Image 1 (cartoon, one colour):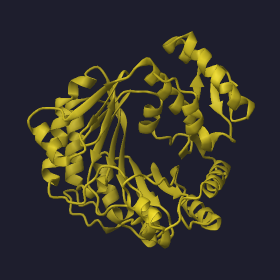
Image 2 (cartoon, helix red, strand yellow):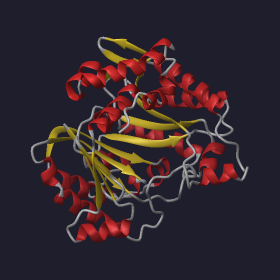
Image 3 (cartoon, one colour):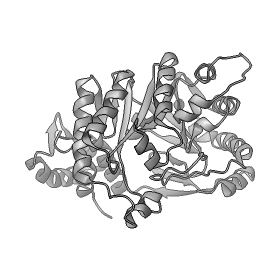
Image 4 (cartoon, helix red, strand yellow):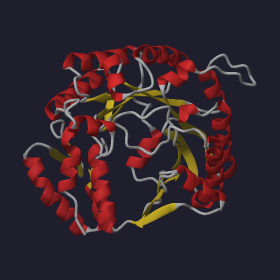
Length: 385
């Protein structure tokens, strides 16, 4: 199976924690949509013998596009690629876009949700982040608390497959407030929750605020505690913690993201989008104008990196330890050789002794104690060139 990721690089405003590529100017929106369609056509040979099983609109804010624009791009995928009979088609969306949308469509759909379903979108990923007004203002989110709850009330009437994002570790977010965020999310019966610790990225507003003393830095100990509260609460309600930041009811794991974590190939369309073929990784230029100009000329504005055996090993270890699938020792030996397996076992032993890792059925996995630390543990297991 393979996936196609389509990056929509537009936002109403800049969230204070975000360092993704986006523009708050929509001046080149029409040209950008046409360029996305053309890149899909130009790259169809890459998936000539592969079936596309997931289409993911990410961003940025894909819900800023009109129904007609989204439908056009979905049609371009079907026109140029072999698509499975029941693909997962996900749209990232912000609550304010869904609530404020006023639609005039050919079939006279009464809501934005019905229109999305009509064009083939069958999964929504909604950026809630928090149900508290003060958190949303601190992060400079475009929606408010009322829009967050109103959006979910409406969305759950039309979609079964919904994911929401929640952020913990926000400066000032108390344990009680975090528990309330989880409680509200659970009350809507959402089958998938992605939850991330707030990270202070370079060149973001948050980094500037912290340096100037306007807000406190992220409290790592409090973040760790909020993570464990999250895991305990969601698992108690039947969610599977199948990846470090991802919780899903059975049958509602993200097929798109699961394919990434299992090393399946994917094509990234749009400025800044990444692609993976198995042995190579590539990424498009992070500039809308230069991207559009290059695609219009029929060239690819991207850089490509050929992954060494060490690169592939390190990536597999990093991803594997974040998931319930773990790191297969047999796969390490078959794909990379006995020396890689010996290296992994030798360097993992310290963490096994600390009860952060364990081995079961020839698979290396993180313990409950080690989950929050999995990325750091993985980096200590890497082989450096």
